Length: 90
Image (tube, rainbow, N blue to C red; front, side, top):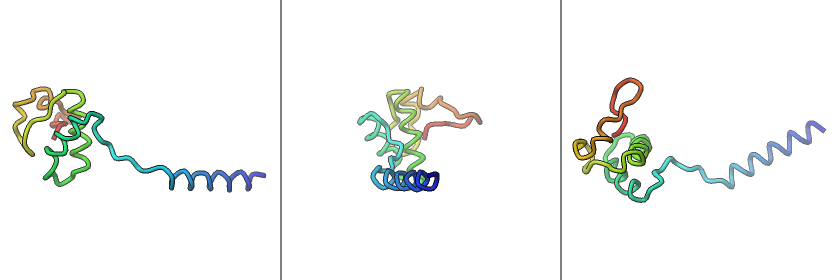
């Protein structure tokens, strides 16, 4: 009985993994998605840039122009820091 249950559980997990698409962290707002895509266009770690830019944009409701710098355009975005005191937003 335990073997049957285990086999069914494994089959269910494999089936659900093949049906569900993996989802990358994307900004919820279309405005944030577009601005973050432009901001992170030249980032060496694009996925991480998109993730943190999206989080910052959702909270601050703005993203600085360009691919680097210009953070003076959005003080909330500029002033966010991580646990180590380094800038959180790309």
